[in-house]
Length: 238
Image (tube, rainbow, N blue to C red; front, side, top):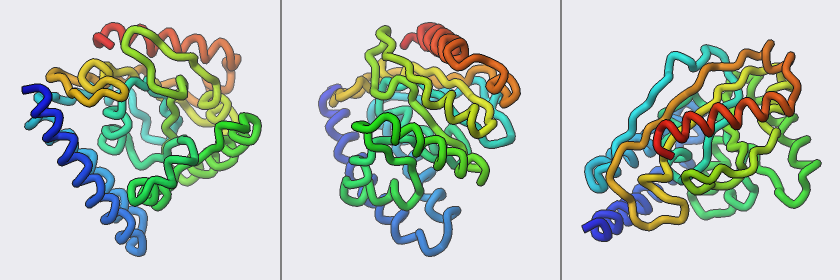
């Protein structure tokens, strides 16, 4: 039964992702608000399908920690689920992602239309320069920036190697940081075809103001963020 449910969801997910990618692309002449509407609708519909077909519900904790101003979100990375959920979790934002994703027909083109900071992983020095320049511009224009400090998806219970890129951006842009933990890898494992029934819990942790980010040493802040995100992830079962 799990296989049939997962197969049904995956097929519908691919179909509606193609449809909404097209809607994002063709709505570009009508402005960012129109493209973002379709991105949020895609995200919401995906989680409706997950609930109805796979028995997976989404619960969100800590919304009171979300600031009014744009900031850098530093999020745990276990699954595709948290990336899909992001448009309904935070205000309009940009991802930091590998450039190759923009070459995916339709979906990658839709990402380019919405805007993303697309880096080349082979040149770390140029990548961080790009993140700072473009990320600062987006933050000043009231767009949030989402960073997965582990870089790639980790297995539940086994944290990845946290990198300081998001902190560097926040300090250079004089922005705050919003940490985010979740347990999405339990229900939607990385590279996992089978979707397991359960509750994906997303928890926003206390906001770190721009002043505190600026006043804290980079390595100390990275260590603190890793400890807080991993502790919360473990509490959530991830």
